[in-house]
Amino acid sequence: MDLIEPKCNEVLLDIGAGTGSLAPLLATKNPATTYFGIDPDEDAIQIARKKAGRAGIDAEFKHGLFSVATVAKWPAPNIATLCLVLHQVPYDEKLRLLCEIYEALKPGGRLFIADYGEQQSRLMRVLFRATIQQLDGVSDTQPNADGALVPLMEQAGFLSITECKRYQTITGLISIYGATKTSADE
Image (cartoon, rainbow, N blue to C red; front, side):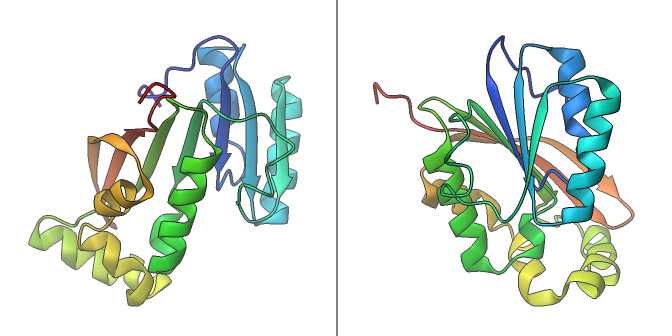
């Protein structure tokens, strides 16, 4: 959360918004941030709308799968976030999502991903296999565990890709990645 520093009047797109927990956190950081969230879980979106209403923040939520077309009526975002989504989808879908995020972002826009990244130690691989791969399957999760996220971000066109933080959890290593879209000048 500390990595995302929205400036006044920036637009943030939260892909896989779930129950909208990021919206109130960002509103406290910068109330001038315009927040949009999309998620395929309709029940989660209903909770997100209620949560934003109770918090008195301006946030718009949409039920659906993310694509440039599904968010075309929203303004282009300066920031996109993607939290715990990529490990759950097939390899081709990981790349499609990243390419569409790149397309949706304004030039110079920033992407932040929080997800299971490369499982770098034997212990993290064991925990990951025993939990996440049991829940979400091996075929979708293994590319993340093998370190595929950074090359996929590069393939989608992102620059300045960094692993900003790592968190060892009882389910495996979760990494926070930051990346940027080229500016209009480049």
